[in-house]
Amino acid sequence: MKKLFLLFFVSIGLLQNYSNAQAHAPEPAGPAVIGKWDLTVDMGDKIAPSWLEVKLSGVKTLVGYFVADGGSARPVSKVNFNDGKVSFTIPPQWDRTDKDMVFEGTIKDDKLSGTIYASNGKTYTFTGVRAPSLHREKEPIWGTPIQLFNGKDLKGWHTQKPDNQWVVENGIMKSPRSGSNIMTDQKFTDFKLHIEFRYPKGSNSGVYLRGRYEVQVEDNYGMEPSSTLFSGVYGFLTPNQMAAHPAGEWQTFDITLVGRKVTVVANGKTVICDQLIPGITGGALDSNEGEPGPIFLQGDHGPVEYRNITITPAK
Image (cartoon, rainbow, N blue to C red):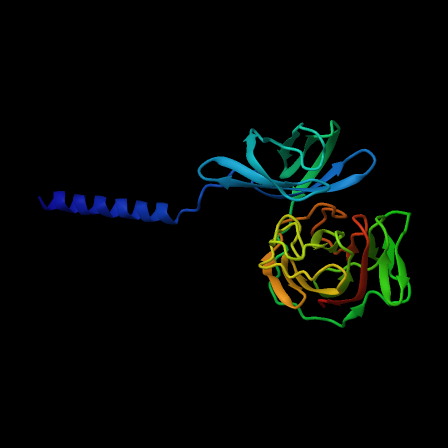
């Protein structure tokens, strides 16, 4: 009888140990496609950045978000993945067509490559690498503020396209009409940025951080906040309130970017506080997220004016 009781308790102990081991065992790795991907798309006449995130929804369904070379991040309701091949479809956003975009890729050596069959009927090839985390182990030590705009001319700036509509008048950098975007010659990693701007009724611009993450500048006074409206990180982060002034008034952004963490203070109100930017936004210069980039101002969506642009880079 004693032997039976001993065997019983040993068996119980083994079961408990097994259960504990199971409880503390690491979760099995998910499909290799899960994660964030920085994509580079060959569009024939240009090389364009793009971005993809794939994540698990529930037990086995894969979903995601996709950013094309323009527009905002769009949800992907289902991502197919089997034997290293990934595919999904997504409805058009700005193309005036009913044709879905089709994305087909293959993962090999932890890199992604494939073909995009665009809604406009064109076919593009792409390559992709995993996006860096951009995590910082320590808080930044701030350097000396730099005046990016001297108030006299466009020294230190250059336009994205040859047709430059930007002019300087009375200490103001002006884009009187839609035309080329403009960016700093210098590139930055982590920084604090102060910038002032003014736009006429109905106009639209944007401030791109490292040339990759757009903080929206748009006439949205009195509207509900949105990730695609004033002070939102376009398509990703929604401000906690609509802090826009009426069109025609000078307004300010004070933006801190450290790794992926961003804080946006719009007209003195903290509307985004220490939030992670998932990936590049539409219209980005490139998808090389691990590299420094310029301050990039949108000038192709209507008239806009900027002044008092100061950056304080991290040492």
